[in-house]
Image 1 (cartoon, rainbow, N blue to C red):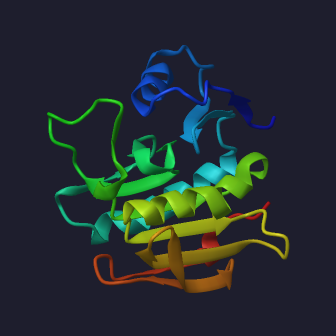
Image 2: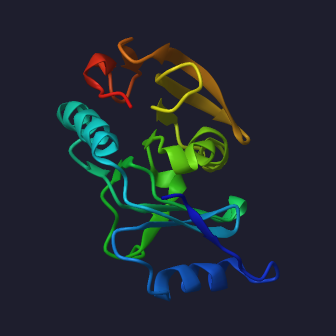
Image 3: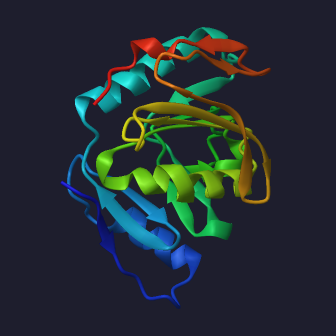
Length: 194
C-alpha cells in the first residue's frame, strides 16, 4: 500500500491545517503527517522497519540524558515548512505539562531517526531532512532500506538553513558514530535488509 495525500485549501492557515490534522478521524494504524502543507496518510510500517527502529532505540537508551526520552509516535511541528512530521524515532526532552498533547516544536528534538519505507522514501530523503535542518535539529539519521544501490545509513548534522552536512554515509554493516551528546558507535550490521 502506498501513501495517500489529502489536498487542502492553499489559502488555509497553519493553525487551521493543524486543527484539521488533529480532529479528523484517520484510518487506524496509519501514520498521518503534514508534509509541505499536504496531509499524507501512510500505512503502518512493516516488521523489518520496526525492528530497525527498535534496535536503534535499544542502543540509544543507555547514552541519553535522564531528562530526554525516545519517542516513536511523537509529532514534531515545523510551521515555517508547513510540516507536522512523525519520525520513526525522536530523541527530545520530556515535554512540559503545558505543551500541546498532539505535538512538540521540532526545535526541541536532539535527534530524528527515519527508516525509509518503499512508499514514502523520497520524503525521508529530501523533504523531512530539509524541514528538520530548518528547525535546527542537531542530528538526522536516515536508514535507507530502499536506496538505489542497496541499503545505506546516513548521518546528517550541522544544520544551516534547510541543509545538513553529511557526517557519515555508508552501507548496512558500516558502524556509525553519533557525536557528542550521544557518544555512541551504532552497529548497523544487525539491521535487517529488504
